[in-house]
Image 1 (cartoon, rainbow, N blue to C red):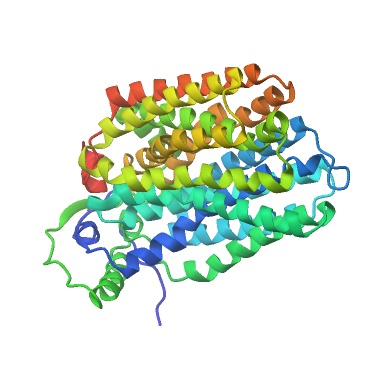
Image 2 (cartoon, one colour):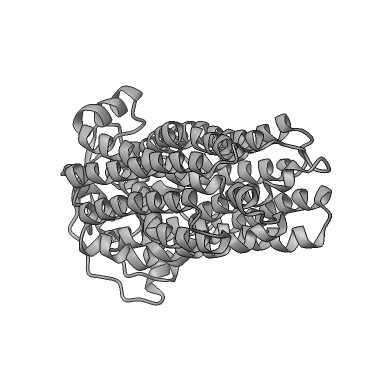
Length: 475
């Protein structure tokens, strides 16, 4: 049998109704399987951050790694540095070789590196393995977010994207429960290693589920593989058609085979054709990365240092914190598809900034105990979680299919490097001073960035709600 992949030459124009057929599909069990298989990325990231955050005070113990607060913050920054590197490398590769191939590779890297974290013997080894784990997660963002947006119906893309992004906090809750159970059941020298091993075991189950997710038909079309795109589309319709009536035939549109785009072409799109969108994406990503990574990566240290919360009890405080973050995008998500992207992104960013400033001020003035501070953050991040999720939605839907993976990677890397990379280490040092007023200064910086991001969204936001990816590219 001839297995040669036949593709149209780059620059060839052709007619296809595949994008229209994808957007018109009724929501089905097939879509749920895709969401679960690919959305696990966010759950795993939330799990990773929580595991390290929850056991952070335990890692001070000489029986474990004997790390200082500054070293714990630096290890978190190493994780983020790895995520930046992984996003850039795998973002380029997913545009070149496809979404499916890369989201299997990145998940495998994550699993191996998380398991290796359990075997760390020093600060250097721990930071190195956290860096590799971050590389796997960063690569996941590019490959997975590209695939999700390219497979979801346009009318539901906003609310589903936000809901998927909120599953980060499902991972947070799971990580909190794991640490509560494990830290209470095992001695410190063993417990922290078991926690990482359980995280790897969770991700392992997703390897098998992902094998059933198809390649993105849109990616195949833009690489001139029209026969493959139609074959995958027929398979998807066959799955959906088992339980739902399929819509009538769609009107085809004209597309152009792009092939592998050069870095010059990517720069031209980002810095010339869509400069306003680039400014918007960078602003949103930097603001949410600094605010989230600064607050959450070091929240366990705040509870331990200022309120004397024992390591085995920190997970109890992270559960309501996670609940607010998980519920917010689910409750508010439909408004991004109805009221619209520009209004909702601006409103949630500005409101989040004001609420972060209030929480920090209350901490500095001694208004809260550990429980009430956690409840305040729960309310803050009910709104802020929707805002942060909308940043990822923005950078994944506003740029052309042929460079979507690289665009997501560049924005994620820029936002994380400029906003998130320094935040954990900075907040770790601020907490280490033992003065809540110093921590408040860090919160004020995050608040100002969020308000600024909201103002930019109000000015530069794009009305992408309920529009196909192809139509958004032409706006």
